[in-house]
Image 1 (cartoon, one colour):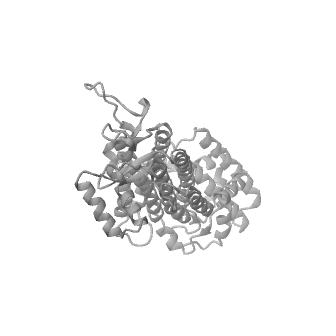
Image 2: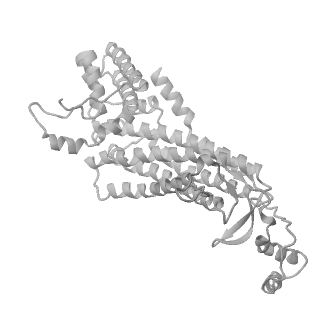
Image 3: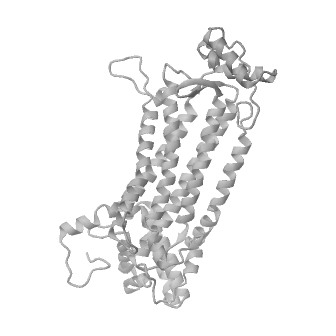
Length: 446
């Protein structure tokens, strides 16, 4: 089957074709929906500037929406011998409408066509990831409030340090996700810029209205400079993968805590049987396999931005075929982080917190700082109070008999500041501006 770029009587060796196409048709299926959107916006603009007769716009729009219906219905395929999703959609249009179908490529290159597909794809996926992060955030905040009075040992250097609480622990991960979302929002800003009209990277002699396609597709702004639009390929993916990596870092740390806290030597939480597995020879085992795999999958995701950085290393401006390989890093990473967020939601929902942990005598020393502070409040200089309590500990005379906790400042055990964390979260989500994008796409497809 002839390629969009192929000249008459030009033949490509099968081995070369397989090497250059690679897995692109597999990943391109995920772009099909967005290729239709980009084409709808592009032909609407072509009609607006007089490059497409008005009477030809409607049949093209109707047929593109018919193709979209097959994509949404799961019956769309990229046929054998078809190079990519762009070729498949143009082939279907031409098959149905004849030469009219060939008009949709005027003023476009496959370079800016795939760029806009990827931007729309990444933008939509970021919206899904943000929704999953928001769900997990809400759960963690609810758990924090519910367990604010359940004390927990706090550790530094894996040595018992000071009293903490499950409220503090759950709340910490909730706020951490908000900070991770700051990077996700930055990635969204870059994904939400319009490259359409940049062509092969040097624009077009057609009078394209790039501001119109920006509005039609709900982009925040165009990439103004056409060369820079092409240079956003790989850069946008890198931003997205960095955000994913940071979320994964939070999830891997939470998973590690769960592995520790579920073990018999800690015994702070209990996981249901659905989240554990047994041993083939030890009948007592309840291994936290889900948490361990979550930790491993999240740790794998931390490496992907570096792979993207290396893939893009030492490339001059302009288009290069390596850009095709960005999909192989980006798309699996997006699927993986969504799976990890889903399983974390399940795990946090079903874990059981154990109460009254700090009544155990082995946690007496957790309260040494509280004793120092009591002396300070009574007028003893801090350094002297520290020495007094230290001597009691060395002499074996400190038993932490008073388990009273008087932490009242913002963000401490007695004042979790959950409303402040909620406000931070709302501020970040409001900056995304998802509603504008959704409204624009609804208008485009209506």
